[in-house]
Length: 154
Image (cartoon, rainbow, N blue to C red):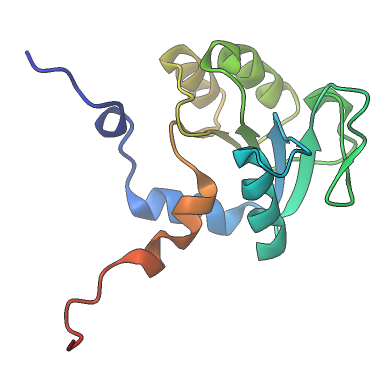
């Protein structure tokens, strides 16, 4: 039996992803970095500039703000409702983060590219959360604009 590519394993309907991105307002990013060379920084920047209320989560006490946004040390320390928990941590940490996302009443658990755990997904889905794994919301947000226009003349 041929191996299944990880991208095929977590293939989501575009309408499902678009509905999530349209419905969420507040996104807690677990693993947010103040380092401008890190992928999480770029994703946070684009989502923030697009209009999402971003909540960076980073336990390092030296990181107090990212792009002028206050940083929280944990999901539990956030002082307002969170629609979506976005995970920029190793996949081994996803189950514990799913437990915390459920505990704070998040509606969506979204794991970045390379981050996936079927047990965490089942836990979150059983608790009523929508789940996306191995995807980037920044990419999905702009995907409709990337479709080729084959009707254009050269």
